[in-house]
Image (cartoon, rainbow, N blue to C red; front, side):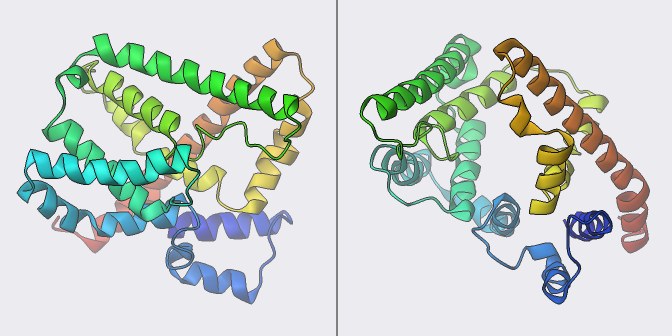
Length: 267
């Protein structure tokens, strides 16, 4: 996080997309912004959640199956049910990630029988995706029909705590868990770069402006025919992921590993 916070800041500043000033430097001195605005985004919330993992593991190991389900029932009712159907302002990055960690513990240690087979998980995944698409279309048409332009068409799918986002993510996770993919060095290497991909392509507003507005030129894609838009989007997403993944792989190999070998020579 600190590496990309500094690197992206000065690289973008060299091309006029960031301004080097006192506030910008101080923000990066504070652990790359982790200590500020804890609920302002994925990265700070994710890191603060990581600090809670030892305490969560103690609870998970001591809790009975009933206690774990009861805890998840309360948390998911608050975040997912109230957040989706009552539009309650309950979302908080850190505590939502804690909830997802406990969901992962349940799937790993005390899964329901249907979670162990893709006979149920694949239909759940397909159904969640189809219902999510349908909800967006229906809300969009209702907003136009009732003259309510302020309505949000993605009410059931954004943010990640909404019901259809949660069921889609959980069922997708279960589908891949049940595939029993053999050990793969390529997959592991690729997976190790995914956090770096996030830190690169969404580093700052300056990066978003350069990448998505100036370089990729997303606004112009809205006028494309649907088939071209789908193809263009797929190429852009794969291209951005591939380039960012390659950059982070080089960082891991030539910066992170040599540095940690010096810091922890006997590890």
